[in-house]
Image 1 (tube, rainbow, N blue to C red):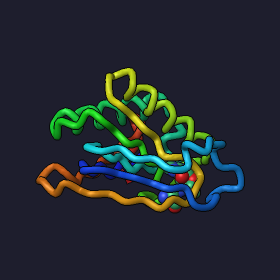
Image 2 (image 1 turned 30 degrees about the horizontal axis):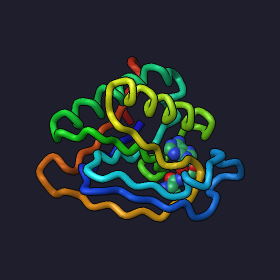
Image 3 (image 1 turned 180 degrees about the horizontal axis):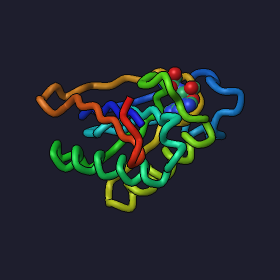
Length: 147
Ligand SMILES: Nc1ncnc2c1ncn2[C@@H]1O[C@H](CO)[C@@H](NC(=O)[C@@H](N)CO)[C@H]1O
């Protein structure tokens, strides 16, 4: 899994078109979303993650939690983003991993939103620009080499 973490004044998105034949079903309310004072986490779930999705979920939650604590962010935006890797996991696996990460972060006490999966989306982001505001992380299941 590849993550790009941006500590932001806000992140807002608007769903445009379908990017998959069968995108995640969403309500009218989910077509737009915004969080202020947020750690935005753009995530590409990778093929290698399919060998142990549960472990990748836990490692991702730990990494996100660690960064959120360092930048003192209480809100997290989980943003499916298929552009951080050329070795993407299948959509059904990727969606389950991202849904589980969202659930686990809520269990950890964060306010969490997740952008809809399988769509083209317009988005606006205001990066805070401090030294820890732009970070990337690569997570792989144990025993796998990072490519
Ligand atoms: N392995 C994967 N990891 C993360 N997201 C993934 C994925 N496979 C599919 N998606 C989702 O489907 C849209 C089309 O690839 C993706 N859409 C996007 O990435 C938007 N930024 C528009 O390009 C995403 O919602």
